[in-house]
Length: 433
Image (cartoon, rainbow, N blue to C red; front, side, top):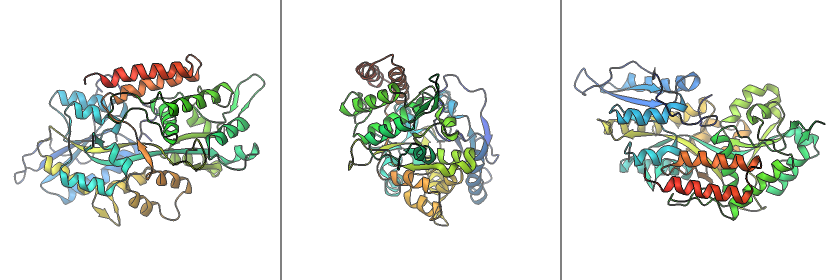
């Protein structure tokens, strides 16, 4: 699946082609009789199940609406931000955009995203959880309808914990460390056989997502509320970096191992990741999936307040759209109208193993017989913290990743990693965009 920004970075070159999907339609229209308005929707749903899942509601809309039609265009996720910015500069921006919410601050600063009209903003605030609304907002202004929302929790292998004599999954950081050390195994040559706790330098979202989820549980934040400086160099940030450095130094974590394949192969006892992974693990592990459990991210101390990270996407309207009222109406239809008790977008996401920020839809669609491993992610919709999306957020995230990896490999001490991150990220988010 290619739903989320795991395994991805933003490409720096314009993609060679845009892949068409959905119903064929003329590129533009005036709205006169016989010449319908045609709205273009640009997303990363370029192939596979996601492409087919989006085709369903778009075809439904086009079949039932004569005056306004929707034509979809898609690129791979790695090309999406570059495509949006280059097309916008060339005066060829799509009417409807489906960005990763991390980019919203940059897109707003560049004049690409149109604020949601008051009735739509009110509906979004009313219908979605705080993390979803926060992801779709910049400086308190709502810019679109949240679509996919991913929260983070702790995956663990029941068999590996049982074989190590551990009675259950950890609830605190101390229990997390103890379990990690007890389950970790190496051969006589020092090669990793089992990671106790999976830390992975795979990509920005893997490396940073794990760290920010832990930071949230400690009451910390990556950047300040005004988005102008990092708050990582704090007691909470120091505690997270100390924890991760100990796990690596004592052999419980091996950042060079790909946790996505290693966990599925029974070579990782615990790892923090997002809810999209549940469907992938079912497919990869077969009968061995029965060994997988999911619990909330452990807290620094027992009895603390739950928190975790949330990342997501949203659908918004381009400032260059010639028919914004019709564009917002399509988004309302897709994301708000109920069919058999749930919205079309929620049904779309669940069909590909994902979640939205509409907890009521999720409970209806998942039902009593749903995979219990999805419940912690659903519960986290009520307490998750949205990923910061100030201008420069993508660059800040990449800088944080580099310093986390330098910490894990011993190239930087905890003090050096915190100090370098603060200097680099402060410079990045403070510059003019």
